[in-house]
Length: 305
Length: 114
Image (cartoon, rainbow over all chains, first blue to last red; front, side, top):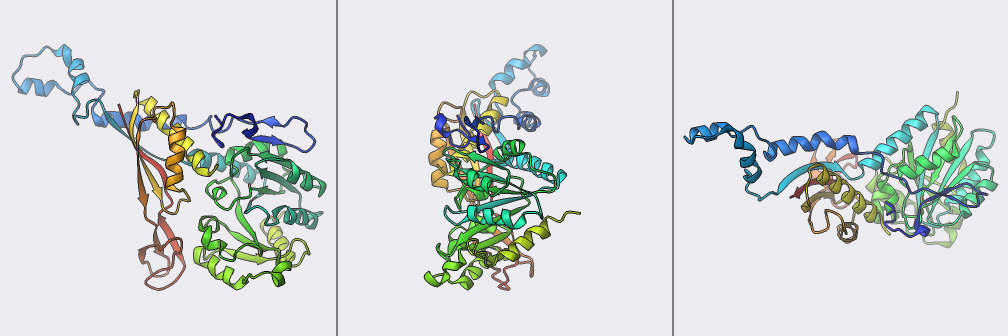
């Protein structure tokens, strides 16, 4: 069963592919290689605390009670009497974060990016906010300044990867099947395939969704949330988890402002309420208006010596 | 398919692994801590867990979910308070410069096995 989609249907498997590949490789191997070392110590201690599995304790008792006992039967006694009277039930304190496996892999990704001085950015938005157009324009603007590589996340199709490829950046498409977000394992596999250049900027375009991607660290340095003026200005209040975890918020399609009922200062107010440290930028990727601060931001975050 | 399914599958994996380490035959009860700001919908999680637990040691387990309240600390005046929804404004000094102390948990606390 696939960890992402919970479904055995091959159509729903995670696929990681480069444009031009006929048969995209299937990547179904995520998440299984980890946690074993973590858990061992933990559990044994608890078993001891509960007093279930051991055979050393009963001597005193038996003697105090004045019974004459043969020393060889303590194993038996223990198998059948439990101090908490739970009839064989035992409480195991686990106390483990469910996202720990993902976060561990995210740390590995992050270490890899640091070592290669790659600036990894996790781009998140609802579908149709103009992420891919923004990326195309950004790739053009960064030409001759920085190397750019892209990981494209979508449930299905190579469409976005093909668009990015034609703008000149190396790209790998991750199709998550039914999955609603990228996870650290997918990004690890995609990064291996993409092999981004040292000192490059790596854009990870997450699956279009303002809910699920916010929970999964990928190893990125910054999280960027993009939404357009055709969406409601109360998005930060409606999807607070996403905005709370973001470092930068881009308000896109400002060329449409005259035609829509969208109050930018309201957005600023709402965004500040859920995340007082969130930086905001307004732009139109289509017309290029307001793109300079964004490009400056990127160059500033990815200084190369 | 929402992220609750991935989370449910991770819970089942984790619980199964722990129960196997303890040579348990089945899990009777599982206790989870889910913060109200974790981004996990408890209803969706319960539904996903029912599906994910099929044919595992967790299949017949009672799922006990503790909802953890959003508690924040004001970095300006030091007030510790329960946040209203996702807005973390200090009730004492009205500043927004606050830090979340709890409410984002997604954790398996314990399992009761036999």
